[in-house]
Image: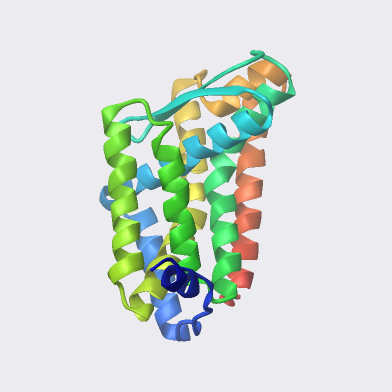
Length: 233
């Protein structure tokens, strides 16, 4: 069974027909733009966002204390270490670009036909993340997401797997941009806040709007490069 799984992961598949690909990307865009559906789908972006904080915290030498995901689509990653300095700055920087960077990596894999490999890598990442979750809603959210990815990976046809992999990729890329626009909208309404951008402003003495611009620039770069990799431009 392991040999069969490895072969499925490493065997490139033929790219989706152009019309199918465009319709799949349009479906991802609709999920991002249609607020009632977006409120549900945004949980997946939060999972990646908090996972990005966690990965960079560990890479920068901080000790990861756990991750919480909440029903209002917010999240919290707790890490221990110096409250200032490069490690904390990079940890805070990682959240908002994480979804776009993951989407870019996914686009690279899809451009080489590894749609099944992408789905299993996502499943492995979710399994690793699951052990760091510290609340019941977070456990349910990650487990349900993993169940959906597993179901498509194991039971879906080649066509369904390809469409789902592209849907996830486009959703990650486009959804990342919307989260940053929502971040700035929230900052404009409330003035000061405890957002990643405002915490970065406190640490670096550079205005929060600068960090919002950095998030957005990184995300738009990933969207443009991802579209090119997928042959959409």
